[in-house]
Image 1 (cartoon, helix red, strand yellow):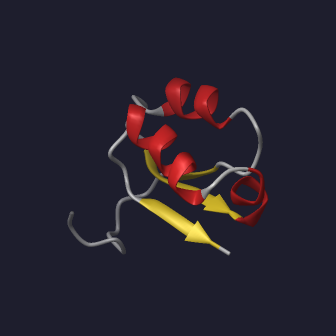
Image 2 (cartoon, rainbow, N blue to C red):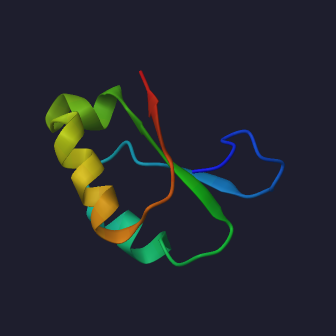
Length: 67
């Protein structure tokens, strides 16, 4: 996977709202996106595994679990 604290600059997408699939689908090919962040808001409505599955459907970027 590499070093999560790499020095590459870019954007971490916060996925804390209901249209997470559309968000990931439309941003996954952008080369300046470094990671996706999920938090309590999205995982309170969905299981953490279902959120990860949605992200993994489109991207293999690292996922930050921010509770």
